[in-house]
Image 1 (spheres, rainbow, N blue to C red):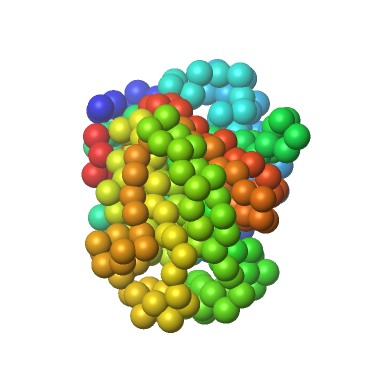
Image 2: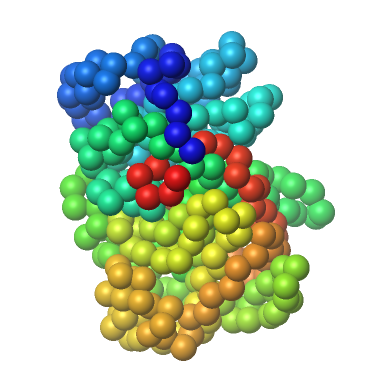
Length: 315
């Protein structure tokens, strides 16, 4: 789907904390590019996450539907959650993401390169794709105690344990190396747990080491964890890793970076579904786009084609 970006006024949301608080240094280059297109815009720099949420909801209430979001995966995820929690129809929203984070994993699904200069090269073309949105609901005692939307990958088990470790040792430089170190460190303690996995297609009980539920393809600073995920097919790609030896994990980490791990390891399987439930008597950690959610039972639902995203590869 193509639109003329010059016909609209765009609301710019810049995360000042992106790139380890260095995002402001790049604004002059970004502004120069926007002026060369040229497009109309207003510029906002909310200092805190809660400020950004309030701002986005207010802009939606005021009738704005076209946004340029500058930051990393956390910034984009916060924007999506703000839109989904607003009182508007998200199908009316158009989002231009400009990569200015340390990992930029979600944008790897949409652009051949995930740096801000490259992603900005697609703006004038105005090619957008409809994009599915995932919803994780945490359930305890038959009540939903937490909700979180996502547009990339939600992880459970080992996936979430790595995030917990990474959040406790937040990288400033070489985030991919820190992520790998965190993976290996977490591996020493993590064990598979029994999980009931219920979907429309099947109900199984397995010893689950890790599980990734993907709309996008990449996480973990370039790992192609869900290599065949399609962001607008209305289905999750569910990658589950059953009980596996620690040494086997170490030997095969490299295959995560080209997506061949699914074929290489018999302990890994893939299925697709639009909704699933995860239940475990053990403490099953969960994370959504790098943000830990409370433990409990999990209901994960795919909401089809909810928002319009600028994309080089899917339009």
